[in-house]
Image 1: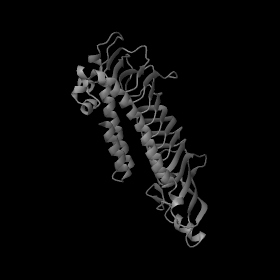
Image 2: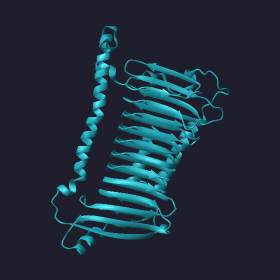
Image 3: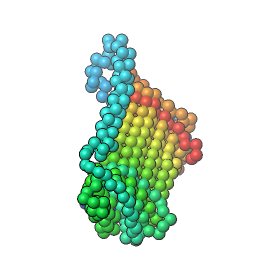
Image 4: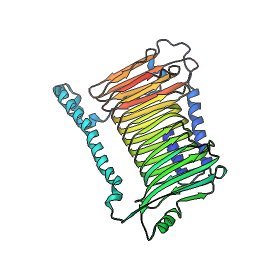
Length: 399
């Protein structure tokens, strides 16, 4: 529920329905609700044998949930009469789910390769290349809104006292080189009420964009693109949102309050980041997250997920994938309340000091519930799910 509310708030900001300041107030209140809920839980004083049913936040209804296989195969699948067919069905299911990832990857790569080569396929005549640069006073800019259909976007920390924008463009030649450049740059960069908008309406132009930001924190940084690679290093923004159709996202040494990173086809990698909450999502690609965060959610259909939590005040880490493994590394000093699930892989929970553990190992689903009680320590909720791969949980050796 909290995740849906957070997404709605970010969408309202992006659409201009509410301001960045109003969004930050709402997000802060949402975070306080979560903190209040976690603080209201009374923990036992001793770390000994604990009755899982009393300490875990997972309900009996959640434990009884199935993955839908009973709906597919019918109740007769679990009967004794059908036990002789289990191996054949499981093997066939493994093959189908494994091949699903390969088929989906092929379809995505074939479709999106056409996006990459679209410019060459469309006969729009001679191409023209040029470069241009801009500079803006830092005090005038509170947010950045970037919409580049095709190219590469780099945002980094600069030592300059102002915002720098360097752009390299490859586009279709119009009447003349001078006229082509003039038409392209006419509405390319605009400043509206503190928001710097960078956009191009030409979907057949390639734009290489390099933006240097001073140390001051932005209110908002939005990036949208059909086919681009996005790289960030040393950026500070209260709200950070990246939405790509095709392309990878690489974020390093970046600070934010709330971040949402999405791509349909491409990997997502974050290192040395700091923030309240982070959501990452890709259909086809690997997700790697490492940082000082309180909440992390990662979702991939076809790709591995690895998350390393370094914040001892972290509240939640959740990773789900259909085809791929899940690796979760958590601080050793926190309390834990966890649920791990896989259908065709295995659960690798190697935490020696957990207070209780409960495993439900059926024919087509393995579920492990666990918790760890630490006096006067924060409780981290851990969720890891993979339909076909291993789900692994370890302590982060550096925390």
